[in-house]
Amino acid sequence: MLAQVGSPARVQAHPEGHADRLRVVWPREPSKPLVSILIATRDRVDLLRACLESIATRTDYANVEILVADNGSEQPETRHYLETWSRETPHSQVLRLDGPFNFSALNNALAEKARGGFLVMMNNDIEVLSPDWIEEMMSLCRRPDIGAVGARLWYPNHTIQHAGTGLESGGPAHRFVGLARHETDSDGRAVLLHRPLAVTAAVLMVRASAWEAVQGMDPGFAVDYGDVDFCLRLNAAGFATLYTPFAEFLHHESASRGLNDSPQKKLRFAKDQTLFVQRWPAGRMDDPSGSPNADLCFAQSRFVFPRTDVPARIAKPIERADTPAGERPSA
Image (tube, rainbow, N blue to C red; front, side, top):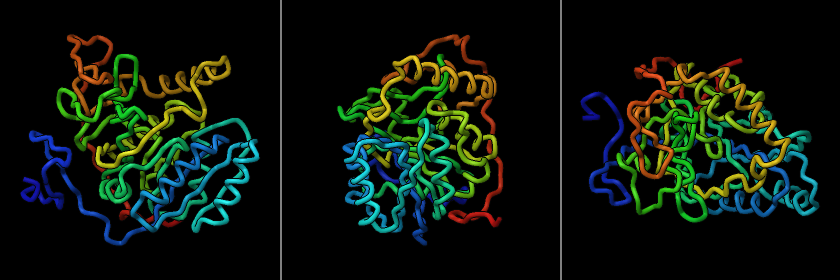
């Protein structure tokens, strides 16, 4: 079937033993281009150390540079670790960027310094599980019609934290949260390569050319909704979003910045949410990953019919032309 439509992808048995599911494998990038990993952090050296060590010891792709934004770390142990790490680690750089935490602005600052044709935004509370994660995500990201590529993230208790973001009754939400590895959702979407509404920037790969096409992240979103806005702007520019379950990571969600449980954080969240709703009312968001009658943020999908909170929609094809994979457009 794929060969008949001229696709270079191939199909193989699902590696997790799902007899009724298949894996679509896209060709790997043969030129091994430079990949820039962008990490914003503030103290919590225990998390940052585990993240960086997992990249160094569990990643089988060599052509990588790592850029860390130190957003006002105060603990001497953190500052000493970053100084030592940057001195001893080839192709690494630490930028001291003080001020209020703004995930979007920090990643924009790092992207300006990045030299790679592919950029990876990564939280400081992430640990690599799949050694071939870069090549898996790049095999999708190198396609000219693809923008952001997201990964499957697990909580420390081995249940799903992220398997794509979809449009739910309360707005954008992570799907299949709490699903265990031995479980599957009603349509198997969590274990399949598919196109969601958006993916989390906790681990997100994008071509530098696509990043520049939409001018990166919007610093108007300090913490929340910035990644969804980024994906939707990529979609509007003609770049589809993909989720792959075959790039896996451990995610200690919000372990560094904490929950939105203080008056200041609640105010910041409300500001982010208001901006998102104003820019992306439900009628402007086309979620290609599920029925508008399904609520998929639960481990097991549940159907709610008729849905009155989500507008009817018709999926639209994405059409665009792009620069070659891994190349930055000329200035």
